[in-house]
Image 1 (tube, one colour):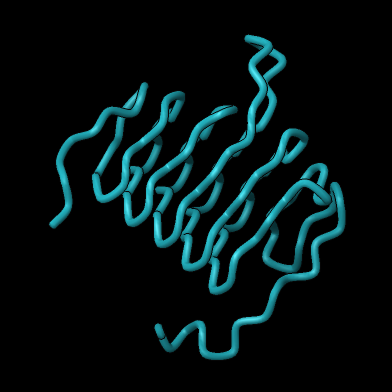
Image 2 (image 1 turned 90 degrees about the vertical axis):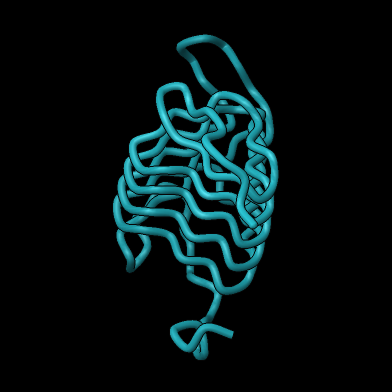
Length: 132
């Protein structure tokens, strides 16, 4: 286990209010948060249709995770699989799953599923390479 998670505790999350780490969840009852997660400041999570963040997931600062989009009327559960990493300022759209151990580069727009064990980035995000 990574030493910074030695004393990890599930955060207190109040719907629509900043946590003590300055990130926010809308519809918190539809969020499943795994252990040893790290969510950066000023990240917004809209969990209206469900958001699952599995164990050891890292999310950079200023990210947006949407289970509903009023711009294009898309809805769907978002799943961030175990040990994936989402780079700072990235946007995850409704219905997307980011696979286990995958890395999404900073400033990426993820509107399609990302498989496990890859690096993906861009607008829209595309797989750049497989991880060993």
